[in-house]
Picture 1 (tube, rainbow, N blue to C red):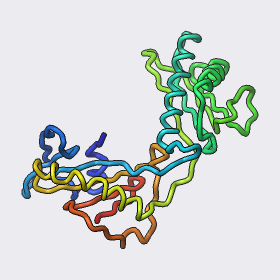
Picture 2: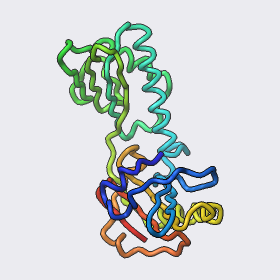
Picture 3: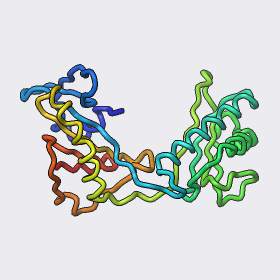
Picture 4: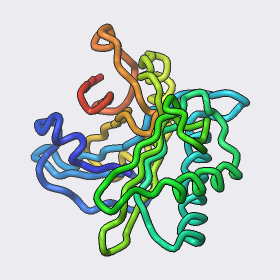
Length: 232
């Protein structure tokens, strides 16, 4: 769930260098040893709220991911060869029915590039059979080992991080503090909004550096887009 490199690459001074074996839950997600003792880090992801039709943005993303994997299975069963595919969704394609998998699989099968080329189709190109709910489709061939991935992305704007969202997540995580304190000398809360998935794509406004929150963590850290680091 959390890779220490995300934080240490940005602010190596924040993380003590020696790792510590995780404890049995309920416990923080990550531990480090330092001269102050054991530091526990509880990791969570900032996600946007409700999307259209009552589904959260993350639920919509999961439905898209499931559809892409179904399309991959359909293609490989029928075509007999493997390719890499990146399907970029239009932001207004909020809900993707499962039957769209066959449409995507068919488009990929009809547009396999030559061995050394990459095929890219955009909705604006008017390519025959281009799924209207996709902004772009990129296809390239597998190497000799045949291991391939199909993945999705989305054209969307970076959302503004709101103070209330941070406040609500701190309050939610504070309920676990008494149990977590049994495992460590210091307890940090790390909130990540790192561009992907799109529901976790936030930019902190300039005034965020002046925000303050009442909490019982020793440190609350918010990472936005892997370039902004906020500490409370």
